[in-house]
Image (cartoon, rainbow, N blue to C red):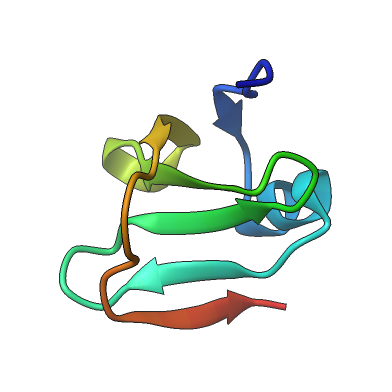
Length: 71
């Protein structure tokens, strides 16, 4: 796995970094972004107070039910 950026200031910055859409899990608000270069989904989560978006893990398996939030 490539080196993953651990934090972002906004959903837009996250999407632009991976040149991908950003999706949100409808049950808990977790964010997902697809890295086309490495064929991997990454999971991110807002920190308390929505100050930054932090890396959680590379996703193994299927995505939960999500909605697209960027762009």
